[in-house]
Length: 408
Image 1: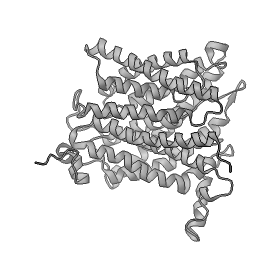
Image 2: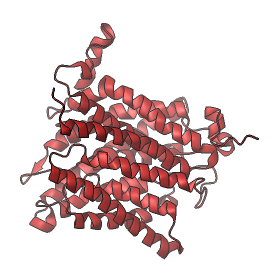
Image 3: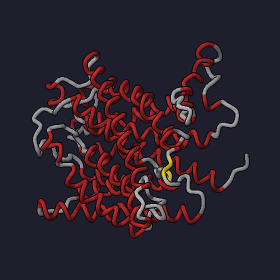
Image 4: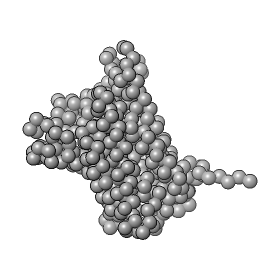
C-alpha cells in the first residue's frame, strides 16, 4: 500500500493521542497527595500496558464486529484459532485487508478512555484489582461501545429526518463512557478517610499544568486524526484551540467570583473541560460557536465539581464534573449549534434527539456495568486499600516506592 500524507498524519495523530495518557498521569499525579503520586501514575501506565495488548488481541475485532446486525461480541471468536492452534493466528490484526494504522489509532483511544476512570478512585485503589477492572470494563463496555459509535453499530446507524449522530472523537464513547464508569467506581469504593471539602490539596501544581498542557497538545491528534480534507482539518484544529481557551476563561471567572482567586489548577481543569466538550463537535461547529461551547463548559464544569460535596460521592479528581458533565454538554450542544443540522439553524429537533439518546444510553450502560464489576471485585479480592494504608500513603504499600526520595 502506498504511503500517503493522510496515512502519515493518522500515524502522527496516534502518537499524539498515546502521549495524552502520560500527560494524564502527570495531570492526575499532581492533583493527589505526595504519598500517592506513584500509584496515580501507575494506574495510567497500567492502562497503556493492559489495554494496548487487549485491543490488539480482540478489542479491535470486537469494535469492527459491532455492526448493525447486533452481534456486538462476535469479534471475540477470532481468539479461538489462536487458543486451539497457532497462538498468533486468528487475531483481528492478522486478517486480510485489516488497516493496521486504524488498529494502532484505535488502540490509543481505548487506552486513554480507561485511564480517565482512574482519577475517581485516586488515593485508595489497589493496582491489581484496578487492572482486573480495566480489562473487564474495556471488554464489556469500551470495545463494544466504540463499535456502536464508530464501527457501524446502532449509534452510528441512527437516522432521524435525514440526520445522523455526530461524535467526531468520543463525546459518548470516551468521555461520557469514562465519566459514568468513574461515578460508579467512586460509589463502590466509598469515601476517602476524612472526606470533606479541602481534604487534599494538589501536591504539585506544576505537574497539573504540565499534564494539562500535554493533554492539550495530544488532543490535536484526537480531534484531527481522521480529518478527510484540508478544510475539515483546519476547522477541527482551530476549534481545539478555541473551545479550551474559552473554557479556561469561563472556569477562572467562576473561581474569581466564588473564591476571590483565579488558580493555575483551575486554568488547567478549565482547559481539560473545554477539550472534553469540543471532542465530539470539533468538525461541526463554527469557531464562534466553539468559543460559546467552551465558555459554557468551563462555567458549568467549575460548578459541577462541587456536586460531590453535596451528593456525597467521592470522585477524587473530578472525573464526573469534568468528563461526564462536559462530555454531555459537548455532545448535546451539537443538537443546537451543529452547522446545517442544529436546532438554531433549522428549527428541527432531529439532531438534538440524535445527540441526546446515545449520550444517555451510553452513560446508563457504562454506569451499570462498571458498578457491577467494581462491586464484584470489591466483595471478592478487594478493590480498596485498607484505611491505615490510605493514611500512610499507597505508594510504599502498593509499589514499594516514593515519588520524592530525598537522599543526602
